[in-house]
Image (tube, rainbow, N blue to C red; front, side, top):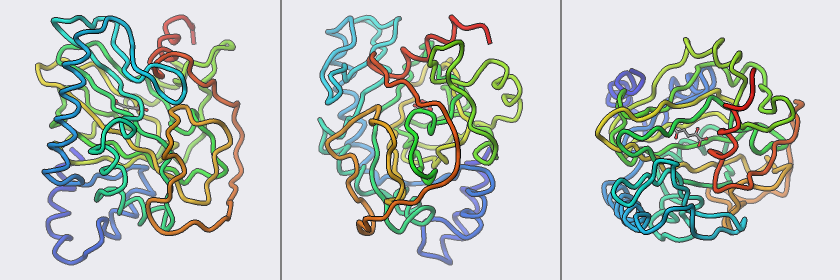
Length: 308
Ligand SMILES: O=C(O)CCC(=O)C(=O)O
């Protein structure tokens, strides 16, 4: 719904401005907490990302447990419980920029990053990256959460960019966002002493009816405010849904806890310059738990254990 609306607006506005986001789109981002950028990737970039991802899916057929290594000493490739050699369900690749020149190049250069610089720049740093994939018919879902609750910073000028590597439709498990929630509270992601990386069932029930799906063609990107409440449902279609997700922050927003997806590129200035300044906003939260499993899916699996 949002993508169609913005497709048309971009066509007309694109004739009038060389900036990625128009003034209205910038206002809409601050009001709603998200923005949509069509053709955020060039055709060549998209093809290179898909080619590398397809090769990792093929490789995953030879594994039955999460595998590979990251800087965090946790597996890089995370497999869903229903993964098999015949029907591979690779659901997460942590920090693909370390093992792929194509992903590294896109992290540094893409049209959505220009939009990030418009919103929280001009000076922008890279924070972390991952691939989230939902193979056809897979049960992989993402429980409702706010990204900021995984890695607090001195201020909240962080933007998560989700690049669509496949066409995202209503059927293949699109991202669902709750507009305006970046301006409401930070919701607890700890329940009964367990960090679940998700809001309580009560908070989810309260907000889910206002959630809107973000869908569009491969190569598009959704930009999300770090406080925006979001989640996504299983893929009930026969088409895959793969996202490359790259998180950026204003250069004066400094991390207060270790990166939950560490990378040798974290803190790289990708737009503008380094200023040696720090800016602080006022908020309170309980520190998150750094995952010990291959990804946050193992933390969100705790949700089933908690009555909230
Ligand atoms: O894969 C998705 O649909 C959402 C991803 C997400 O919210 C996350 O990884 O934080």
